[in-house]
Every structure is written in C-alpha cells, then in structure tokens.
Length: 203
Length: 128
Image 1 (spheres, rainbow over the protein chains, first blue to last red):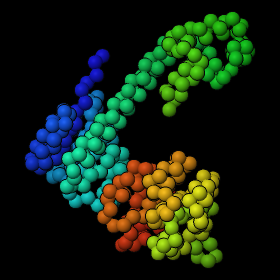
Image 2 (cartoon, chains in turn brown, red):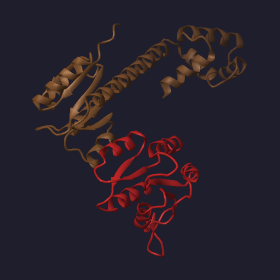
Image 3 (cartoon, rainbow over the protein chains, first blue to last red):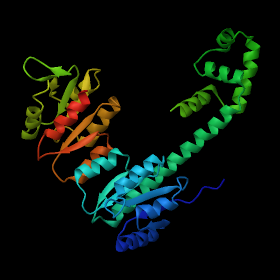
C-alpha cells in the first residue's frame, strides 16, 4: 500500500496568518491545508492522515487547547505545534502536559517554525512506521496455532527445547517442529529477532 | 502524609531540591519548610543519587544549576525515575524555557513570582 503524503494542517482564525503560513510551507515544499476554525478542521480530519498540526491557541468558538482535548479524546496522535501571540507559562504547561509537540510564541522566525514542522513530521512518520511494524507482527501472531503460541512464549522466555517439552508434556521432537513453524510464520531469522518482536508488541 | 508534632507536614518520602546556592533556592527551601524530609543535596551527582532512591517523592529544580544545563539534568533525572514528579521553577513569562523544560521531562513548570503557593500545592499533591 502506498503511503499517504504528509500534510501540515494549519488552524487559525486570522486570514493573514493562515495565508502567510500556507505560502511559507509551500515555499519549503510542504503540502499544507488550512482551516479557519477548530470546527472546520475537525469536521474533515481523519486520524489516518499523516502529518502535523499548526494550531492557534486563541480562536473564537472552540479554542486551540479545547481542540487538542477533542483530538486526544478521538485518539489522534498527530503532533501539535501551538502558536500564540499571548502565551503564558500556565497555558504552555497545560498544552505540553496534554501532549503538544511544541509551543511557539508569535512573532517567530519563519525558520523556527519550519524546523519544528520538520521535526514534527519526522516524529509522525516514525510513529506510523512503528505502528505498521507492530501491526505486521500482530498479524503473524494471529496466524499461530494455540500450541505454537505456547511454544513461542516459552522459548522467548529463554527456555531450551527440552524444558519446553517438559512444560508442555510433549516430546522434544514435537517442540522442534512447532518451533520451526513459529520461526517460519513469524518470519524470524533468529531467536533474538523473535524476542525483539515480542518486546515490540508488548510495549 | 500527616502533621507532625512541630506542625510540619510529615512525609515518608523525600522532597529533593536542586539548585545553586542562591536567593531563589533559599526561598524555595523556605516555602517548603512546612514539609519534613526536604533535602538540598550539595551536588547534582548527589541529587541524582537521591532521585534514584526508592524514597524519592518529588524533585524540585529551584534555580539555574551551575554544573550543567537544566534540560540535561532533567533528562538524566527522568531517565532514572520515569514517574517521579519533577517541578521546575522559572522566571515569569519565560515561555520558551518552560516549554523546553516540559519537553525534557518536567511534570510542571511554576513561575516565580507571584508566590510559592502553586509549588506547595503541586508538592502536596505529589507527596500524596
């Protein structure tokens, strides 16, 4: 499946700010979509869309901080960069405590924003890549039989085939066969790789 | 947590204060004088050792640290104790410093002045 392109979503009620940010991001080769209000953004945003969000704190109607709460309730993981002309420490702390990626005070240098946007896009891409990786591992786990799953759990605890056979009340040869199936279905090249896979889905 | 015979707020766990020898650090220590088990280690190494102790209740970074930048110290402390409440005192309106502290693992940033009431409230909550 081809990855969706990354988009920088800009939500700000100020026309001039929206337009200047759109131009700035376009000049940096970044695809941007702008919205004039939180409601407008939320009505169309899909959590599957990769990218990041540049969000004004103070807007009429739903504020930026309220919109962040709403996104959190929806389970969205998009990195949020807050921008504000009237920021104070309690506001910044609240935004960061609720998972904001960054908090920038206006006026800011164009490059400062572009640097933060780039870091936010990288974080989102990394997060989505990890998610795809763990999803693939879970799919492989689901293909194991109950007995193969038992063998997997015991061998990734560091138990030798002989001990696994004793624990499960089967012959060592049977364990070897199940173990080979586990390695094949999990597409693991070594026991260490298998352990790393289990740690990835456990975290 | 309960009141001791001196009227202080008795806490089993330790409140660790990190900061250089300055007026700010002394003010923080004074503000926390209602709590027992407040310690002010003589070095950052010692503060990190206390932070890593099972008795650590919270860490307060009261002022600039002479030996290393606050962000680096925060990261080290957070690396030792993932869930330990860590509070950073900053000058008023220094939003950039507050954001940086939050990014590096602070639980909350408290600006001083106007008062230390917010700090005492946060510490009380943390010690519960």
